[in-house]
Image (cartoon, rainbow, N blue to C red; front, side):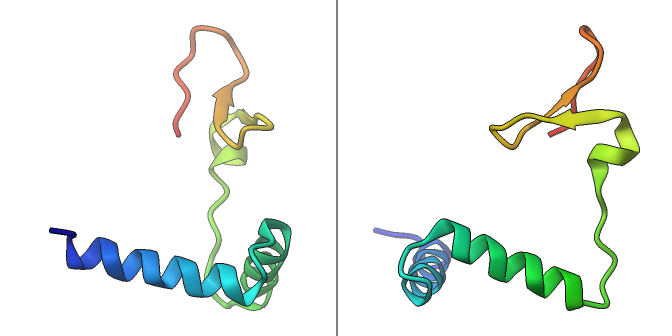
Amino acid sequence: MEDQVIHEIRAIKDRLASKYNYDLRAIYNDIAQKQKISDRRIVNRIKNKGLTRRSSGYAVAERSGAPANR
């Protein structure tokens, strides 16, 4: 039996993906544009913690041995 919350999340994901013809770049560009015009504060933890972002999207510590927050 599938959890109803998971079913709803997957339905939202599928509607969003189909709206942009399953193009991840188009989905990202839409989200980025909405963030720019939003009046909400966007927190960038990379700048605040001295971390750098890998191409994988994960934040990593600049120094070896230091913990990285993900």
